Length: 204
Image 1 (cartoon, helix red, strand yellow):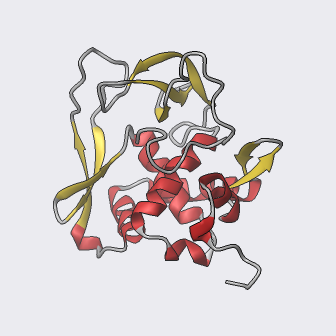
Image 2: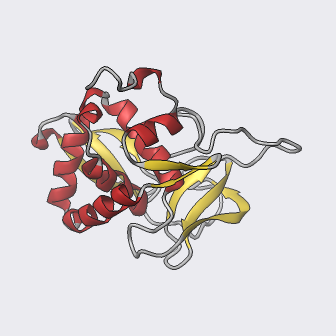
């Protein structure tokens, strides 16, 4: 890392996305960087089978391949939902270490991990890397499953994984849910950050 490079420990989440080449600023907002989009698309095909997903997860978590896995589990909801598919869980030593809201969210994260082209990425611990990957999904505008457009829904819906309300960001073609955002507070103006904070800003 050069002397002019910012200390990544001091960067906000939007700044981290820019520093790692994931996003670029457009006015007060962020959009996916073209170079990162190309690399991200290229890595999706390499995640077609379970073995490649487990290998990528092991690299993301800095764990031996034989100690990690992906398991799908049914998630109970208080009301029927269009997102009724089983949820993927990351396993470390046969214990659940992380869960995604959908297959699409998992594919988006794993492909993004492989697409980051910056030596500093390896200096983050796995929890910080997963938080950056979740923030990446906020600026993602295409579905990792079918390539359709990803947009926030107009209505507040129940989270697929918890008993609370969220704004679901999903694909307009296959309806895959990619990320969940907190609904705006009544009468609130919202924050100036174009990406939620690294913790508590949105669900998995």
